[in-house]
Length: 311
Image 1: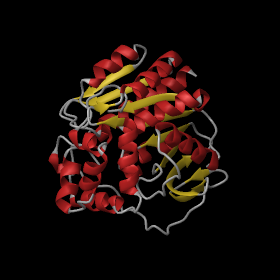
Image 2 (image 1 turned 180 degrees about the horizontal axis):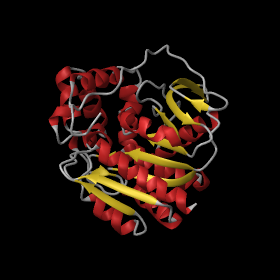
Image 3 (image 1 turned 30 degrees about the vertical axis):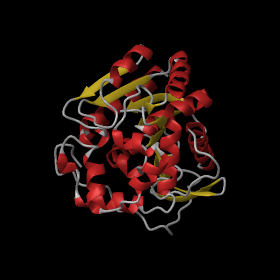
Image 4 (image 1 turned 120 degrees about the vertical axis):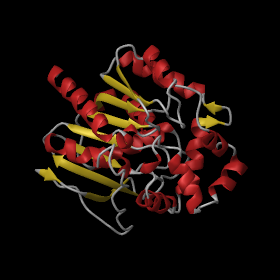
């Protein structure tokens, strides 16, 4: 798939009863479902197990299909792992209250289940970027480098739709509309180029939205991270301070036409992470890994390669 090509949607979602188990050696291929702390979670695991590991983390309400373009390019010389975060995609939800920490700890537990304990290159988009940073804050030794794509955590401003979700009655009312038209509006907000809102991508969005726990988890995460006024300051400030002190190799990228988290957040990222590398994609929305697939892949591969050369 080329960012300037057809803009085709993600691959078909596997049926809910699909199962697979991680290999014990050699090359991994495909994925399926894992049981992590009693929770059924969908995952993808490709590449050679003895190669440097890369973890891909999607955004709020999304799924591992958002990384479709990276698997093939990274897998020849990396172990590439992604999961549907608990309650999103086709994964079950975790019990109890949701928080950035609870999601991060679940991802760590999933990695343990897969037998991956080495330091990872973690690539996160939107909420996935905040989760990536939280993993590094909780267990610094687990994260070798960070790639943060239009990541949550760098500013207060966020799309009105997510601010409404933080208001309990309005959020629930908003989530009731499962129409194709609503799916289109949601997908359209993610991209600068409307050709990326394909019928296949809309089918996938509706399948993911049909997860019986999707709505309650989305509302819980939205309320934890923000209010109607925007993204909460406290968790952002604490997390960024911790990560800044780690001075970990970091690449921060943004799309200049992001309607979910504005590109102005990139300037704050420059202030708090002076050690990091930065890139702004022109005529690009919230998901550069899809809308600028080839450029994004090349940027990530170059960055990861430079980290590995440095040792």
